Length: 309
Figure 1: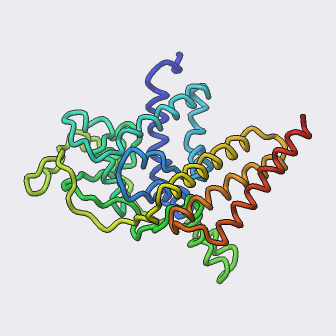
Figure 2: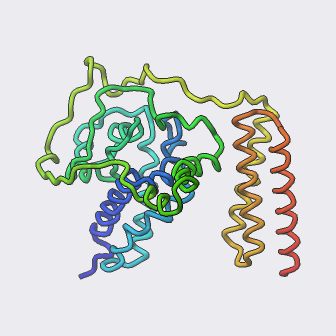
Figure 3: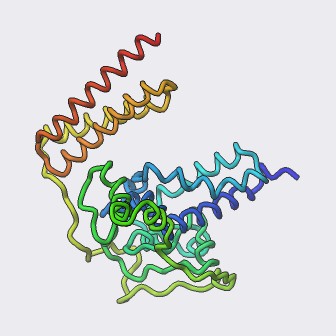
């Protein structure tokens, strides 16, 4: 029986994604990697692109058993399609979509996942998994309230990727390495194990106050705005983003450890300087030092590249 072209790989990948996503919220070590995605306080398409750098190191385990039944190429393609589908559900502009809400994950479902505490509606493409396993919550009011609780209060991508790890490792200084491991794998969110096929046909709660699900939210909380940059600051931010992107892309192609370290180090320092600029809006001594170090690493990598040729 050829399963490669059937719907089974799609269903298997989506189910694996559900449990991976649920585990990322459920364990502290998972939340340390995944909380970056929830750090944005505006619910828009750009939120879909805000991904944790370390998250792929944890989620692959859930897709691995699928290799016993399906070709690796098929799994890889469906994983990419699963991620691509989730881009459009990060928007405030879409309300309830009728019968599609019983099957597909939509903005109506996913907004509840991004509203603190957000420990619900873990689905990728099919919302049926949340309804089957009792982790579904209905959006009944439109609130401009997304992100972390409390707010991360930074736009620095390096700090956002490290902030929860720092919180976990505070116990390392006090109680030793074992306490850090214990903290990492301690349960953060407990869901009662349940399986309810009947929930697939349950209706959705009505919107509060008789409001339309298509109405835009008019209540929220104060949002972190960062620095008020002028046009030169914005141009510098774009330049730092471009420089970091080029460096990190080059790092992926390097086989030499020295060249990889120089490219990755330069890219990360550019990202760190970008975050400082977005948060502070000024060129302080620390930011200039990061840029000089990044420039030296980039020059070193170029020299090593010419020598290798």
